Image (cartoon, rainbow, N blue to C red; front, side, top):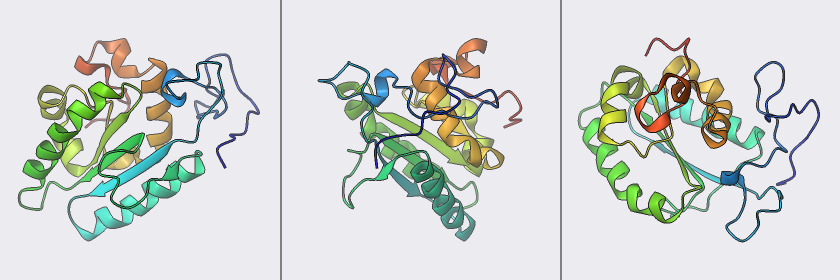
Length: 182
């Protein structure tokens, strides 16, 4: 665990198919004391706000992250994970208030730990992408329901500074998929 496969690694850390090629160490994959290029085990936390479909999608997100080499953070880590993913719902009452409140609590943590990544996904993220970017510019990735499978790639692109959002000058440099109509 923690050692990622390195086959088909291009110079920028992405395979020809645009998939993450774990094994390329970007600054957000290195511990603060080690900039030699060694890849650390990264932890993740998925927070689910919403409907039963969101619970299923959160399980899928966890599987994708673990498949990319991330390890689930211990219960009660409360934002101490290297990657915090919010899976949101546009239908449930107060989901947006809970999201922005929790994002606000993570802002000072992210300031102290610049390698930390925050991602917001789900149907609320798809519907209110511009609002999330405006209210929480420290969020690294915003993705819709049809982009769930791309989360590891979007996190890597945000880390490497290669996100499509950076190329288009989206505030906060969010790596938004150009094919994402969200």
